Length: 245
Image (cartoon, rainbow, N blue to C red; front, top):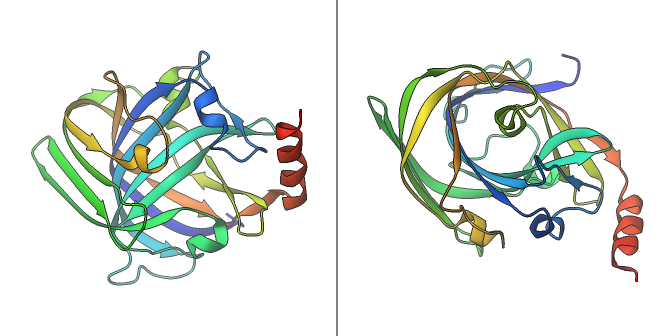
């Protein structure tokens, strides 16, 4: 717990995944990161969820800041043998971070969001505000019976059980933030409606006709302070090596 800086509960999370060729991702990633593929295929994921009980370590939840909605677009990466995720965007109904996004290099966007649920039917809508990179999202899904935890070595496990994220600080340093939580409890889920422009706003291909889905009622998470895993100088050397003939 020595590096933990914040706690939060991720509530009613839907994972929407689709496969793309690894070469479509490489130009969008920092040269120090490798595409993490499964069966030769890379993946993008959109995840709408709610944050509850957000608080800094040694502090209580702050009224008006401890609950908000969030919507992520991410992919799967490796650095030096470590598996993690890299975010192309994180849309949020409010900013409630221990460290400002511009310090840790996370691409946060403010958005107007709403979520509703009636029985097993859930809906989530989002539209960015005050940005030159507009994007919107609308989704309706239906939750079913419980299913087993993701089996290690399976595609399910590859897509949902990640414990680190990588980002690039304004200085150019590559950062890793660890996330500690139990395995995601999963339930069956059916996609009823999906419209999104997050992927297009990031210059990436959108969901194919066939998507993979996971749904979880949620987990409690502990977030650690970022650590520098590679310097800016290394990024310049690797970028030069990548573009040199």
